[in-house]
Length: 147
Image (tube, rainbow, N blue to C red; front, top):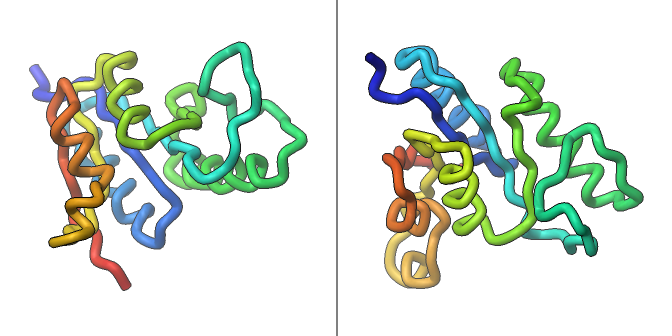
């Protein structure tokens, strides 16, 4: 029996996203686990929708910022040969949405990147720290070195 059956990878579009995705893929292969990936849209306005905060990669919108975000996310999903049905693009607060999606998917493990900041930056809050303290499953925070 594998320790993990479903891994949720939380990605942004930083330069280190690909290295983070490679580590999550390695973990999913080692455990024979399904890999889902999420990108949280927290930097563009959310339209008034009746269907919630999630948006399909195939859905077209008249919002250039959204279309750019979708294209970037789809490129990562395609590059790592992930199933689009396991790729989630959601609006909201990354700290809350990552944990909520992990619960919804019944993920055993969340993989997030951590910049390892100290002092005032930690007090202001980091996504990895919040996910670690609020998730109902294991969390792996992969150290990301700023260039």
